[in-house]
Length: 162
Image 1 (cartoon, one colour):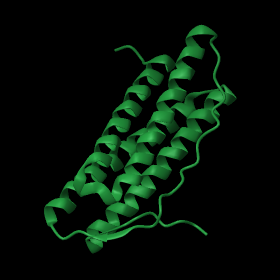
Image 2 (cartoon, one colour):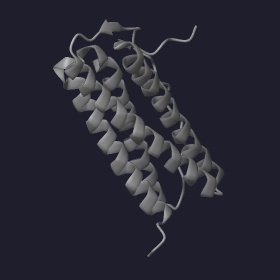
Image 3 (cartoon, one colour):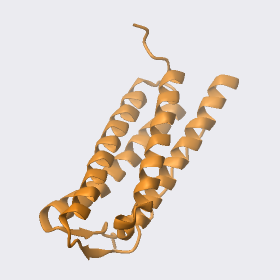
Image 4 (spheres, one colour):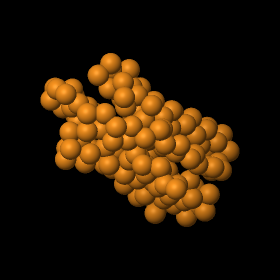
């Protein structure tokens, strides 16, 4: 079996980001998830940003053999929300989405961290380390949502840090 190259890894990461963008976009459009729509919309936009930056990296690597500067992106939390779910089916639907999203973010974080560890180029290392950090942040936010729904049956949006 052939060992994947950096370009192979970038292309796989792009497809994963595209899938996440779609999953979050779809989750934001589900009527029962309306209260969570701002969070899912922002996650979708964040994954689009990752996809676009990975596309730019792929192009630069192919055309010039160079890494790009990855400036990262801040995650701006939506307003604090608190909504109780009356029906278990609504909560379970949301729980399934959050569970899948958490798993995706965990896998993405590990993949980016592994790539960062393999790269000797400082700019490439910094980019993938930052991507891993951003995916970890997404996981943490989704984990808080999962815990809140699982423990209290209430969606309590991410808390802003003062």
